[in-house]
Image (cartoon, rainbow, N blue to C red; front, side, top):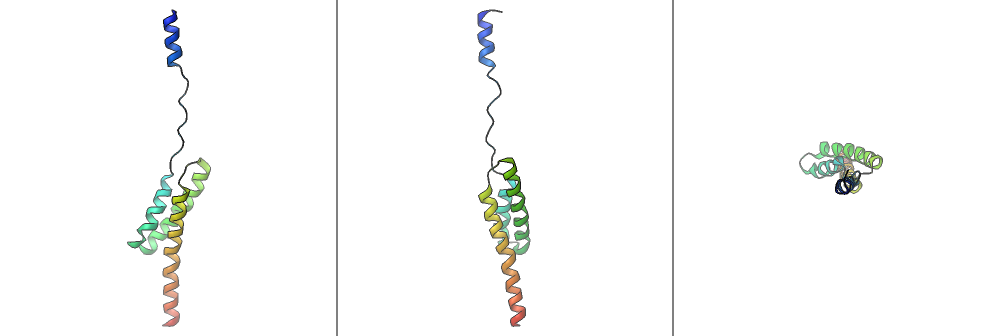
Amino acid sequence: MTAGSQEEIRATDAGPEPAQPPGSHPLAAAALIFGVSQILLPVIGGILAIAAGHLALRQSRRTGQTGQGMATVGLIFGYIGVVVPIVLVASMLVAG
C-alpha cells in the first residue's frame, strides 16, 4: 500500500453516518386532521381522532418521535366532537 491509498481509506472510512433525529409521528398528523375534519364528519371524525391520538402519543413516547402536540390537539378536538353532540342530543331528549 502506498501512502496515498492509506489517506484515501482514512478519508472514506468516516464510520456510520450520525443518526437523524426522528420526525413527527404520522398518526399525530392523522389525529389532528381527523379532529379538524369533524366539520364534515361530526362523530366519526372525533372517534378516529381519539383513536389516532392515543396511538400516536403511546408510540411517539416509545420511539422518541415528535408530534405529541398534534396528537394532543387531535385528542381535544376528538373528545369535544364526540361529547358535545351527545350532550346536545341528551338535552333535547330531556327537554322534549
